[in-house]
Length: 272
Image 1 (cartoon, rainbow, N blue to C red):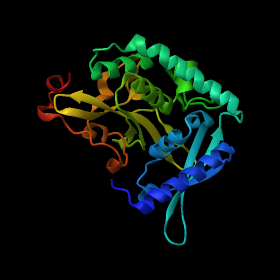
Image 2 (image 1 turned 120 degrees about the vertical axis):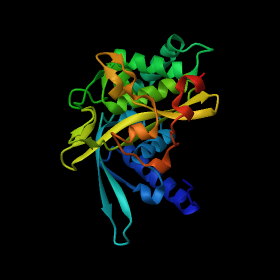
Image 3 (image 1 turned 30 degrees about the vertical axis):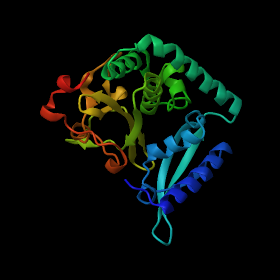
């Protein structure tokens, strides 16, 4: 998606304003809806984390609503609960996660290991060592990598952010993606997502990974949270294309790399 100069200015100003609100631990902040900025909800937080790497550790939980002004411009309103208001403690959490990734990377990834094996080993590690939890009252770090890598329990966002950090260490392109979960035949495909009773919306996080193939780098969906089955990683949500994932969730397709069906659907032939 191409972004105009006007959109770039709007994105920059809005991100800095939102960052200031979070630094001041404000419970309410806003950002222009993606129809005007081209950014999805997950990309907003990725942008903020790029400006301040502590951002994932600030937020205990959040909900969103949308509002429109007199000109018909829609904005997200983020209602935020914080993990705490001590920045020193947040830095300590970040340092613990950084040290954990530095320790884990040499254990999980070897020099000549193919990309898809690196992704699988990271997914299998998280599935085997992390428990799914969705109660922020008992664990304020459900939605960040500290919950996954240090506390050993988190929600879907924690899994996605932890995989992102491990893939960064492995040198594999990785993006955190989010969107609402869909019902199929009257039931959700999985119970592992956030449901907001007040806004009656669902929110789920997973990843896109860039795998080196004989046709160049190709992106695939990976969902560690939904792929975790009794402390093992099931391949149901491993290296999947858009068509498969669209059966259970939605996302802003234009804002992310396309994940197309491999020619001949022969994964083994293209993966190195």
